[in-house]
Picture 1 (cartoon, rainbow, N blue to C red):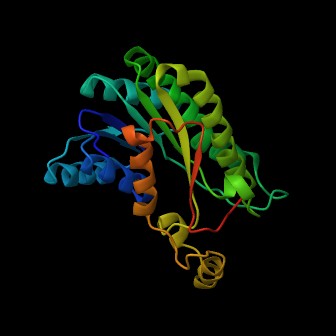
Picture 2: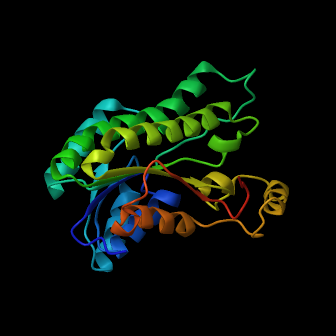
Length: 247
């Protein structure tokens, strides 16, 4: 899966799955535009990538802000000359039972997890169409496929990403641009670290492979979909969940 000469933009790259994806894409030869709110963590990741002989640049970006997405992507294109691979990974949770969920928490999750992906895609599509090559990869979730109590906003945003993925796939396939999603299951990140040990143990019982996933498990799937080896795959949701959801 060689990605030399390719430029990848990864949102939410400062930690967790986004951090692993950026590092993995760089290891496969891609230059990486690192986007997130925490500039210090992005700088540390850029230094790590440079230490491996790769290329990375930092673009501080709050994906809940439309103008920051537009200016950030524009800056990344200006710096690297193009964006070949877009990984829409940035996401938040604001969990609550739906009868108690505040409209602000609904809006914040939908804006950050779904609307940001649409806006970022809009910014990179013109260049991909012109060069007749592109990879759009949206990080959704198993809970966008099966739902989760207390996460109506999160589940809706991730299910929306799946629909967005398929719609974009149909729109741009004729220009050699693929649009796919990766749906992680239970992955060990800062988002899941706050969960109780009892919850984690019960979750593992539902996973046929018998273990929690790692950010690297997801990054491997992303790198594959970004490569030429996946050139005949589009509109697909690649499950990375240890068998937690089948069918």
